[in-house]
Image (cartoon, rainbow, N blue to C red; front, side):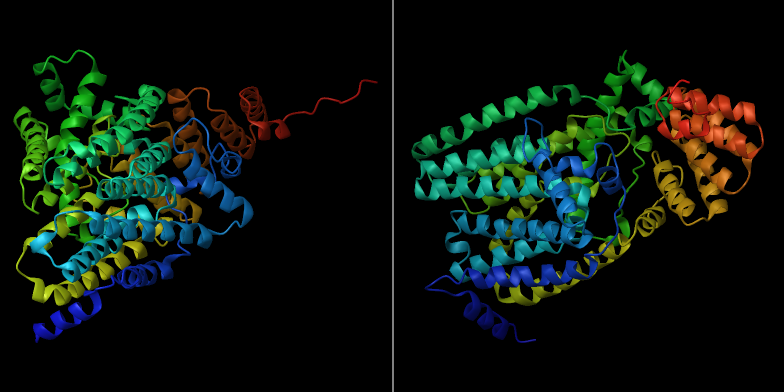
Length: 563
């Protein structure tokens, strides 16, 4: 292959006395659009249902664009579109536009970075920036943010974060205080879109170290940016302080199951933890420190065969004090290495900037107890731009400039195909959870009951009652104290006309959740079907007392007017 011709083509496209900014952006947009376009009609999956069919209603979100709570504006965008158009395709088009904008902003940020110098002439700089941006745009891990409507919060928070980064850099390059103020405004919008963006100022202020000394001239820009950000960040911390160290949804059940393991109990006692919640948080922090490198591996060595909507990790086998120390030590070493590389005086310090961006933005993963969902790819979307920055810096240093185009085309083709595989797996809720089951390395992994539960829900909707009962039973064996598992299996038994077993499951569910009005209603229906009128009446009456309106239809109606 004649690489000289490729290099000449690269020079022709990207060599500019007048920079052709629009051409690389066009090249970035086209493959990203064609990647996602065939999947704009993909169905709702997992947490999408909680937003579109939950309480508050999706239409309630359309009433409030902004308020004092994080995530309001992203949810407003979903509610507004659903109210006006009621179209899944329009929802996904907006997510696609946001993803493309994030990719374009990464390209523009890389263009604003100083000190490319001798490592990359102008045309190489533009091509390298495009390559790194395409890496982000076409990456299969990014599909879990871009193609998952419930993650609109992450898409918009990333957009505002990158806008803050871009304007702060532009302010440094131009000496414009107004750009630093604009950056602070975008940070505020980012952290109000998703509180996980709170570490952004700490992640982008170190880019001042990319500039040659003396750096005192940047002090005004830094302070103008940092002070408003500190105020916004403090407000969010005070607003969300109840969630610091708290369990994620259903995490307490997972924590109780994990703590019941004798090895975990021994470890907790040896470390002197008195409160279980404190030990769970410590366990979560050490686990997330190690999983940081799993996320990095997923991005740097993308393999669709190891990706799914619900990845389960065997962290119990590594629950040893020595392994915990190694994980925390490795994360600290990564962060310190990033600082040391950034402190150096060559273009390679941009590698350090990207690494530091990843590590500091990742710190929010330590704020809660992540035992139910320890490893979720969409979370990495927020800090993955740091990977693109480091990648661009490495490409600028490596002596492969004549081979850039064939390497970039090969990588883009691989990423495109891998992302198609992931988008295809998310075509329906059923396909997403069946894909997750295939990716289980063991059926005994902590939290795997959620996969079987969701597979069973889809089988219940498809009237495949025997299979649904089988998978609900697998989930119950793994998590016997989770009320909804017994309730849903009860529905499956009822639908399969096995009324006695349905009653048994509903009754068991009430021992876990004694005030579940819906379950009393289900018992009433089952007793009515069995011909037990008095028992049915008692159950309907209890359901009505607990606020389940449908139950009143099965009770004797009181006369409206007295004679």
